[in-house]
Amino acid sequence: MPHLKGSLHVHTHFSDGAHTPEEMIEAYQALEYDFVAITDHDYLIKPQYWESIPDTRGDLIVFKGIELEYSPSVFSTSGRFWEKKKLFSSSITPTSTGFPSPRSTGRLR
Image (tube, rainbow, N blue to C red):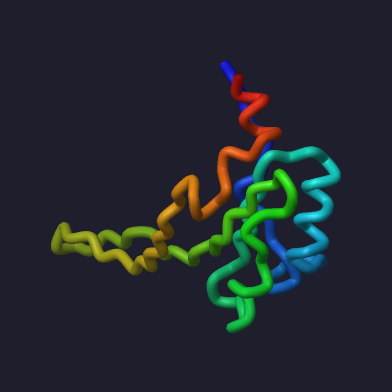
């Protein structure tokens, strides 16, 4: 079964990471990863966050995302559950990501 090498949880200086999105992308590209997801904490990102992350870098697919803060369900004596949630959704399509890249396609064959 073919596999793609990637990371789905990378932080940058926009939240609690030490490096810029560009530096993180360069590092994962040097490691020959197929994809990386930049997912900084939702409550720490700045307005320029989304624009600072490129869609691709060479053959590396870059997913833009956020790590959501989520308060788990709390049970009350009445037997009801209350939840505090935030939801973020994104549409990922082959045309929006450039996938499959030539290098990734070769690995899938």
